[in-house]
Amino acid sequence: MKAIILAAGQGRRLMPLTEVTPKCCLQPGGVSILEWQITQLAVSGVDEIVVVTGFGHDAVEEVISGIEGIKVRTLYNPFFRLSDNLGTCWVARHEMDSPFVLINGDTLFEAAVSQHLLADAAPYPITLATDQKNRYDSDDMKIWSERDRLCRVGKTLDLSHVNGESIGMMVFSRSGAETFVKKVEELMRMGDGLNRWYLSAIDELAQSGIVGTSSIHGLSWCEVDDPVDFAHAEQVVKTWPVRPVREPAEKEAAGSARQRSAAFPEK
Image (spheres, rainbow, N blue to C red):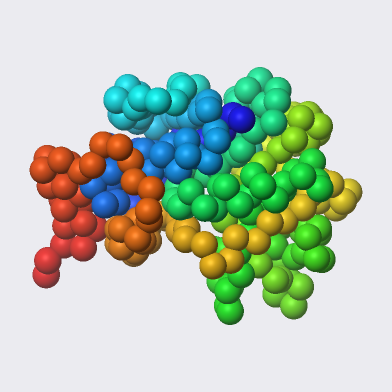
């Protein structure tokens, strides 16, 4: 099984942490987000990972150069400053030629999340990992589902229909991958293609009944969008039973401390 990680953006909401460091290379718990992702995927049966890069490509290359035991390579998006993640998927569309997992570069998750999604994906060509909570805000990628079928996904859904959120991870069968690629290509030919999220493609496909949902409620995950999220992620990853092989060295722990200090400077 292949996984494609979308990690082309800078993560401006995390400035100054991401002034020169791409978001996926930040180190909650002394280990980069990317290494956390790769470790959890490896124990879930994923044997090949493609990291789609853009900002800070060289830093990502340096991180993956030290990873052993699983095939990891990068694919550079030269248009990362001009496009949102639909464009990043368009750059990676030739990698979507077999069943694969698609993951946002800022989604952190314990191995049980990816294991559950892969085990739960059979009924639909495309299956979205989802969670539930009591209240959703304007920044949540909200979903409306009926049983295990996705009806709509987006940030501006009518709250009266919302019953979950996308966590930024989904799995595609071979036919689902083919259908998704066709939809991505179609949307990129439209005038606003560069400014769209790839979940707008999923939203349109869901309305044809081919997208399912897999609730991972109760399992551990988080996203890293801003300094508050980063501080939360520092605590979350400490609870996970599967850790990257390379434990934080003194230098790396110091780097993580500097990131925390930059995010929350003393007054």
